[in-house]
Length: 388
Image (cartoon, rainbow, N blue to C red; front, top):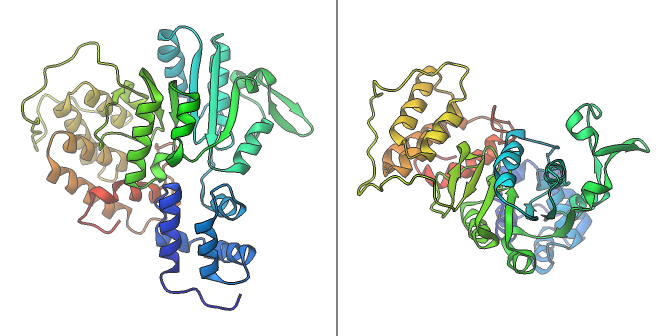
């Protein structure tokens, strides 16, 4: 293929990915894959760059041309009991209060470790469960259905050792776990029929998926989840994901470990006007030790509608370390909820400046997999003053 890449070709490819899959695929991120995409174009057609785009337009996401492209874009990083506190929450809160069989959906399951962990928790608690696991990648689903697990250092975790067995040089999930799970291909942007066939669900786990979606796609998926859950069901998002910026029917519980639409045990009177947060640090705010998990404490306070205390906690953390990205992100969300849109924008603009020059693939400390590039996508609609 000798022809040069046409002008704006990368933008055209990004728009197709954004429209069909929901990913906020920006031109600078696609350029990072230029060598890979060049091979994809050569493999798909001998007629050149524009013919490749036409091929994408006419084929379903199940077609080889799309599946091959997505294999280079999707982040399939996962592991058993990843962010284990959330599975403790599932065991200690969700399973304890919901009698009978549990119907669950692992959305964006990648190679299946999340769904396998969910099944292991149900087996530990001797609970019957019907678990559906979906992903947009055929290759990931094929790997998941085989039950093979990648363990870099062998099976040293006693919690999972009883559920795995070693066979022909690899580790495989026990049949008692695999029997709880049914695998199905699905695109989250087009999952209404899946929900109609298999829902409603008691629990939806969708972790570290929405951080890669553009804003409109996130809103569509959240509306789908609202329809897919039973009225008092649970939505479990990734540790780095938050609904602080969004108007939904979900209420945060346990510092963000889960979201539900059930009313809190003690409802506080709604304020007639948005609560104005003082810019000075309140004297009543207790100092926070350097080792404290400030963001989790602040989110827990925010969930109790104690916005002034939460904001003070985060500002104190930023005084000690202005580079604390997660604290600044959380503070901007609390400002936005309180009606202080300008203050929220200032924090996000500062956050955008902090991200400048950092590689998209860099993992943010303490975020359980959130990359700089994904965070740029999250804050872009809310930081109009900066190029993020």
